[in-house]
Image (cartoon, rainbow, N blue to C red):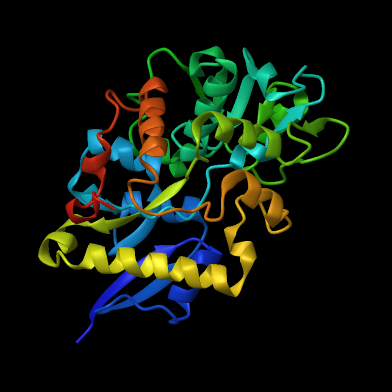
Length: 325
């Protein structure tokens, strides 16, 4: 009899073959709920009610230093989403922000300071322009009661040398339009203006040049989420992490076969020939060997950002039998 497991994942074409049953983990009957990533991550922090689920890499690293019985998880080296929310950044037209390099000294609105996309944006600014998190002022636009950072305790015991300001619901859009924020990410802000006389897109090319420049320097594109499993489940059924890992990879390959657009890292309209020439044939590699450099920089940036006291030890984040992948 198959082991029945409950999972959650945000919409992602690489998950399609798993969701429709074309790909099935060996020995496992897996049922999934779907929803928006931010809402699901909040739920996991509050309830931890699912057996296997998508979760923020940054927040996962933070839980390792702020352990609770509710957060006793281990990870599978599966990475199906890119941390590229930054390419949708908009700036107030009067802020003097013509490029990402101009963000030094500016006030920036972000859904959560702890979010992986924010960690990677700061890593990219540091790598490309030498901008440190202390060189900007950060304004959290997600209401505190829904903030992942607040759930993790960052609002009470967070970075000592970084300016982090917590806004009331709806303040972010008003402040951006009024010029009280110089730029912001759109996620988590209702009625966010993407174009108009008051704001302008920071990356008119959709962020292609910005991301390509980072890739040319580092050899990777930043990843947003990984897949977590309840540790007690993995300890009781140690074959489960490997079975899931293998199934996720098969699902991705089947998704590639079905539709080449499953390979896109920006959006469906990307030129796949251009993307392949820059980022390679499989921009979503699984396993630790292909992702160690990326994870190491993410852990280092979390430490630089003041989110963790020490850089996470990468192998310790993942289930033991998958550390050689």
